[in-house]
Image (cartoon, rainbow, N blue to C red; front, side, top):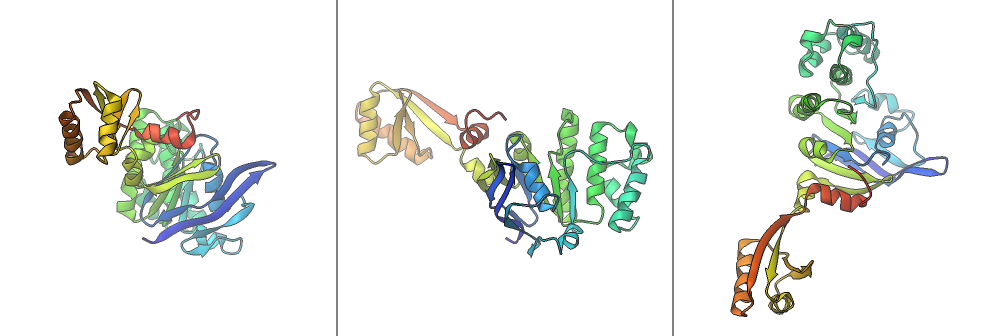
Length: 304
């Protein structure tokens, strides 16, 4: 799969504090890449480096197969839309008038405005002053401005921050619909695992400036596989019997853990215990949640 964004050993330091540390990011074409991490992990700083708004201490950035540098930055940025932190707008102007200004700055044709207004479902509110918009509508306006010029890559920094549940759902649906409608690649940052889980196709988890996980969302879900817990009349004997017969198992909190949970493996394990005369008192299935995996990766003290 073609890579749209690729960084190598990307590092940023403010004073003596390393904010981003040797980041190797790969964003596949056409995906929604969820950039996940606690507040202060380095997400916004990384996005700003991708836009050339701040310069890395070391490392390289490739976007659309081109190395980002001061000479070609503007050429590359023509194909990138972004919404970093809070949206910018002129409150005394209408939503449409704000987009007309952005069109002029980007050199985009005026008919683009109707297209992006339809994409973010703002046709009915386009003639209201931006100062009268709700926070959700201001986020939509910012997203519409980012979509002008039909960018190939869209960078969104915490786009659901401060929205109510209905606004979060609307923004999520908008983001999820864009790759199919426009063919663009989206890199969206968030500190909320539940948000990324419902939007992204690929995930990168950053913690204290370091990328500690990067893969497809389905690969992350595989880590949350279920485990089977057995309570037996004699756990020590049960574990010995299973181990002797090459059944992957361990003991934890006075329970036997079966690591293979397919039907054949479970049936074989229980049959071995029954034939050995070991009573099975209880069988429980548990599943490691994505939240538990996230906490394991980033440390127990980190709050979601």
